[in-house]
Length: 57
Image (tube, rainbow, N blue to C red; front, side, top):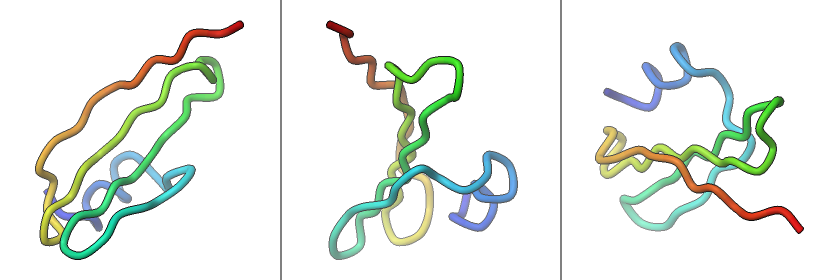
């Protein structure tokens, strides 16, 4: 999948970061603010994606 396809299917990310040919889109669901989803791109195409859960205090 390309970045454009991800944006069309998932929408605008909460934040974007990366360097060189690597870029991350970060998403935070409104009803699960302790969970972050990421999409990792290499050369503009999805290389991996997943969930990062954080523990609340």
